Amino acid sequence: MVFKYCPAPLDTLKVVILTGAGISAESGLKTFRDQDGLWENHAIEDVATPEGFNRDPSLVYRFYNERRRQLLSAAVQVNTAHLALARLEARLGKNLTIVTQNVDDLHQRAGNNNVLAMHGQLLSARCMASAKNWYTDKDMDQHSACGCCLPSCGVRPDIVWFGEIPKYNELIEQRLFDADLFVSIGTSGTVYPAAGFVALANSTGAYSIELNLEPSMGNSEFSERHYGLASDIVVAFVQHLLQGPSNV
Ligand code: OAD
Image 1: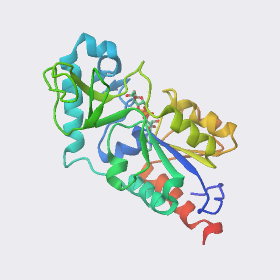
Image 2: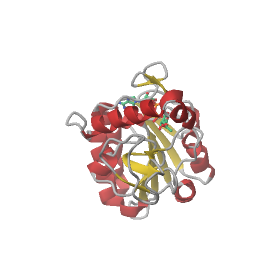
Image 3: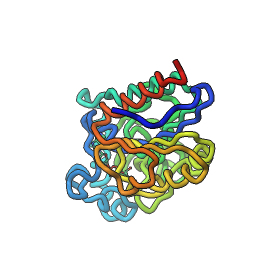
């Protein structure tokens, strides 16, 4: 695999990497759009919208409880693409920001610390009154006690549903404005604002690269594109960055 991008010296290179479900596919987690728009056999509108939650909260609690248990099961482990990005952070430090649309914790488990989980996290619960959140690895339902304010205020999965505002918007924009390199990995590019990050990065002069199984919706906006399994192309790209001619 030949990469055209010639990295600047790594001591000053500022990189933003956007990840989507494709990077976790080889860890045993299904992507969102690989089954006719169904997510683990459920319509996204039923399990990933505030309207779906109001209509049938039991279904939504059960759905995320199952996803959380699956994430914590022995079957789900980090893959070599996650580990490659952890190696990159070990070299670039705070100059690497991972922005993930994924609600799993596989980047953090692999060793990345600088991760902005813009769509929330399965291992987080949110108080419906105060919006405070906290770590949880437990099931939740309508009767779960909040503990942060009123006993009766209610707890929900700390997931950003369609129609809600993604987390860390300003910080992500700032990092994109500062970036020399923007890399999009394993995302179909169908959900905004993440689908617009490539245009934002391009507008301030960053070089942009798509690494995905197949061309995304916005593939033509990238300076360079490579298609294949994340375990192949992400590992090869990180190796290219770390061992590039300007850094040996
Ligand atoms: P999608 O399911 O839309 O897209 C996953 C992408 O990963 C596809 O383009 C696949 O071709 C690619 N892919 C699959 N397996 C791969 C592999 N082994 N290696 C590399 N690429 C692979 O998932 P996202 O783009 O992440 O939002 O979806 C974006 C958002 O839509 C999600 O965060 C979620 C969803 O509805 C919310 O829940 C708010």
